[in-house]
Amino acid sequence: MAANLTGLFETRRDAEMAVERLVQEHGVDRSFILIAPAGDANSAGEQTAGADSDAASPGTGERSDAKLTGPIEVSVDIQDDATASTIRDAFAEFGAHDVGRG
Image (cartoon, rainbow, N blue to C red; front, side, top):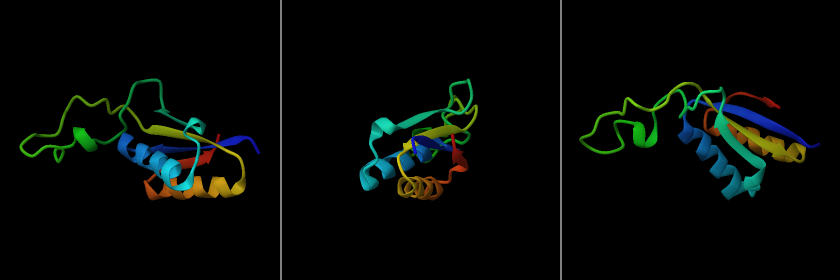
């Protein structure tokens, strides 16, 4: 089959959570996965999350210097239809959009 499946995530955190689900719970080899900004500019996603959010540390506000210039793309090499289904499920769980074969 030798293809890949890609999905776009609003936050870097969601992208990383999807990757961890695939690696830790489904045994996908981490070397088959690429995480990168969807565009040419450096980006942490389209929304603040994690350490950049106002909920990160009590008494601190949301950071305004996060590079929010576009979505984060996750691309996973797939070997068979069962793996593709597992990847789609993990992408959906963490809110991926524009999921398709690359």
